[in-house]
Image (cartoon, rainbow, N blue to C red; front, top):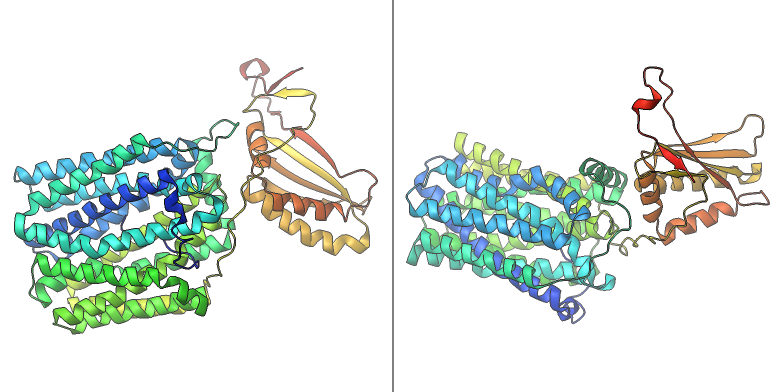
Length: 551
């Protein structure tokens, strides 16, 4: 909830708002805006409460850390849960945690238990609920709307949040200044109940797999492996983590800027946050124009420069008006930077793993934001606020230069969904779901003139097979019959073998056809399935469960 999900290169036009014609998406999207409004009010209230009861600059900055650290710790698990369980129920559970934690925070403040560490603890719990909800909500977008509307739907997530950002902080400042902290916290708790009721009422079609649910360990492993094999996702994660670490100083230190540098109160803080949100909305709505003119890498560079200029301006000014203008520029850079990153991850991920890739992206990006909040808070406390903001500006310029190492590619069409159609080969044994390991061997006959082309295609095949679950992939050539090549890979269990084949896409099948054209045999390549059996003498046959039964 603390960060825009991103916008695609599509223009802000009627097609961009097409997902709102979907009743389920529209209802949850609107409820999410209400909740986001409450969350922004709560952020203002907690940040200002911490600034008034604690003299430590680090404790004030740690409010941002407590809001982002749960995503770093929990998102990978939350993504695996989102891909293996009913996403609607996962969203409901996450929202319940947020509402309960917010109610406990409100009650604690009402009873006078406004201890800094207790405030950070409840902020951590609220963010933990968001960390559970967010991957399931992001992954559910593709379940609710058509594929062609996914980029537009993600754009709406960004524009919606940043529209609320323009009024949420200012409204929070007004409520805190006029009615007190208790009112702001109570209103926030009520706002968290809105998406709870909406999710309870709305139902949508969720693709179900005919295969058993993956174990948590295997689900996380598959998500990490897929992410590690996707250059697009890795580049987005690297740049996002660095950008979050460098740029969060703007928001983490803003309460200190208002209190110490501008001499303002909660209303001034809310006004500056509204300026940041206004710039973010402008950046989101202008994305289409910018993307038609500039590459994604150039946009990321400009976003870093804009945020660096914002940070440097805040370090040097004592004027509320100048600070508001600088924050508007920073807000535009903020949403522009996140725009391509979020959609790049979404579109590079097929539906079976999208919850995990999004969660891994969130985990590392939020980890960078949490670390940045601590780093810049420590610099401000041990040196000066000006040093921290100037250091942030310099770091942002380095992030812009990091494009040489981690370039962002242009957006492409979304990753095709798996075919989920697979005819199980005829076998003489009846393996159980957990029987294994399974060894797959495919024999090809390739003449010398086709060897180089064959090797090029097999490199692609290794990538395809490995990212959907193949392990220990290898290609061997016979010394006695040089035309004979054998592809070998393993899966831990029989179910994993079936799951691998259900994840293959049309493009993957087309690669098989291209390889087949290089095969010189009269019959198609011969595939055989094997199961490894233990031969250790220390293991008695009657002490182990059978691996399979005969027909």
